[in-house]
Length: 331
Ligand code: BQF
Image (tube, rainbow, N blue to C red; front, side, top):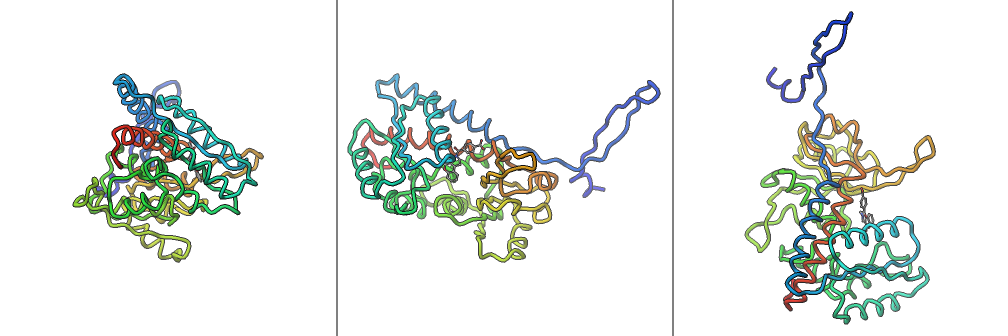
């Protein structure tokens, strides 16, 4: 019984039988706690707003963020739009530079060099992905590391890898902040990260196994990084032992209820646009949400989970860049 009550929830419902109230006891499967990324992102944006208000009242100009958008990808346009709205909400001045998809790599890079030199610009982001004929690596490396609010420059990635203070890529920082603000402990825990992309999965894994003996907070987890060549039975083996599963693959329904330890925390970083039977498009994550939410202790929704956190943490990084540039220190 002890074991049962841990995972089951009793619910007393009052129903009417022959016009008399009857109390019945329902056995409900435990429903996990929803991690409301939208709400947490709003809280963070309020905090940043207050800090920026104070910064400006001390006589500084507002922070300034420039987004470089190459081409017409609708999802990318939407993401840039989300970032511009968030910037406005927190008191960051922002502008989007739209470039045609036919532009050469060299022309994109010379645009970025101009922004690097412009003292009124604090943060520069290049919306990814860039067109096929452009090297993402060259473009990311052309951003001044002090203005690299996405944290994708090799210098900042290197700093992250050795746990130095740097611009942490916004999605990774968003995932960590969701975990912290939901009071979920990572010290000595087993964490499975699915997906090893350089911009998302890898930085998440780097942060989670960070050591407090370096100059960073230190999350101190045992991290297993699974990827496309992890056999499904191995993924299942590691996932079942995980206290936290973070999935960033774009594989719909990768994380199923029978792979999850009861009470585990599930962070869904996946975003896939699907068309339902009724012909509408909607966003789904990597996690079988309806199934997993009956097993997990905590779960993030898609949309409204990690996505809004990515945007909020970009604002955090932009303010961080503005402060460091104004004080002439290197982050
Ligand atoms: C939400 C991104 C893949 C590739 C490049 C809120 C965003 C998304 C979802 C958003 C993302 C994903 C961004 C929600 C920025 C997150 O309500 O669930 C916000 O704007 N994101 C990006 O800039 O580049 C990507 C995903």
